[in-house]
Image (cartoon, rainbow over all chains, first blue to last red):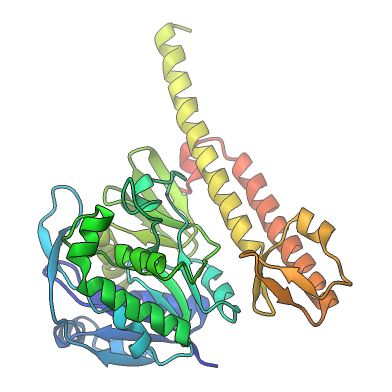
Length: 267
Length: 111
């Protein structure tokens, strides 16, 4: 039974997702001791060749997949509209080389061994529905996909076994993606940009919720939370409510600070 | 003490208290994550109630998702659960005591 992490990394104009993936893979190897497969495009690989010539050694396998379509999104208030390549995530089932996979976003800072507890579960699919900001507040936008619609699930972290059930789930995600404009209208969500969390939520809903949930709370820092200190054991953020010390895994919306953190490590 | 001084002291205390509560909540969250135990394909959240209600003669145990899990060796599960809980609670207790000794926002967040 093979086990490993799968990450997707496609750079845009400002953010090197490739660099985020390299840093995360190092954390995964150090803290969770599991192999990581990265899916990236040639431009991201070329960028990594310049930034980290030995980047391939961080990964168990490298899969090249050109991004077929792009969309744009704003990375925080007052920031530029940047391209965003996230449309190949539904191909995870076909791509993963592992029997058991944890599909994870590159902007999650790994600081604990929590995710290792998911391996070997009897469930085929574990999805994430519990999340709070750094102050423990649960927002309605991460509870329901819209005010009068269905339950929200994060695509940020997901565990799956390679089974018929999960194959069906990922095929359903592709179907949702293909019919997103119409489904966005039905579920009262924005039709642009396509959001994988919504794809996940609609696919799970339409299949009658064939998944159990990950028993951890996903902490996220917002675009406005600034990373001010890092150590081996914790990171500290400056937020609108003050300073906050975190020794958990954190989903960082503020990619700019994450890149700064990585570059400081590399110096 | 003037009203202004009193308000300044109250505001400073409120900031300290808010940060203390925040760090306490995060510690508790980590404790809850640490009490998760994976066994025989099931995920269990170990608590005093779970340990107290565990029936060693029953080979079926309900996991966190309400899935019945067949356990071949109940004694091994109970032993693993006790160890996990003891370790998690020990760490939680020590870190909680450490937190309570901090008397400023700066020391609470390690700056």
